[in-house]
Length: 296
Image 1 (tube, rainbow, N blue to C red):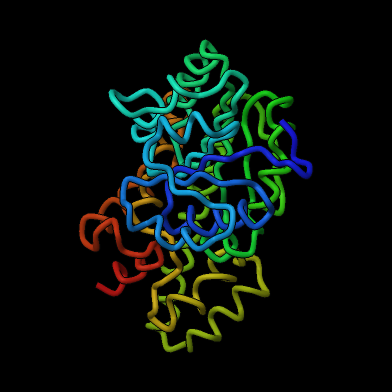
Image 2: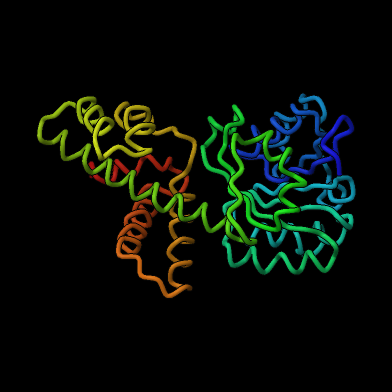
């Protein structure tokens, strides 16, 4: 497996809002890309990209590639893509191949899939990302990689086509655990920031003044810097990350805590708030629309 002049073929499965720019980044760095999505229309924006081929099946993609990237909705879809009945990857992957699950998957499920692939001579690492569509486009995603260090090292040049930094988090599944925990903290920060914005505005303080104070004070967080004035104050609510995905990650984080016997004093309240928002606004709503729940 070489990342030199003759770069290995990469399979990319899941061409959604994040998968599309990520696959383009991989192809743009000279890796032959074999792309697959269950929605044929999702592949159309990639067909004009040099070095990209649309695969007709998962089996075809597996036979053609040394590395396969998964950017899928959840662990159930990942498991089906790997081991499902009919068209699936595992039975057709080459020995020595590497599967990189960049989805927001459940860490416990990831740990179960690793040994199954290992029996077939295939390595699995989990490498979820943070940064949203904007950073997927410019290749500055933060990547959390869990798995054997030697396997991560083999594919690190590939990962760096999509991300500015690869942080090795430890054993298989640790990347997915950190992604969920990161979004748990992010969701808490966003909800707190929205509440402060709403209360301050109701008191009569201009929204831009509220945000300005937060961003030079101890209340500053990712949401105050990158979401309030950009998506919430103007009412555009188009950050590119859905409310349903945020709720899913909070759920993964709280389930992880429960499985370890850990108490999360904020967890249950946070999960209920986001579950209520998903029920009332739909999971497809942008996650910044959590503010609309406060307006109601």
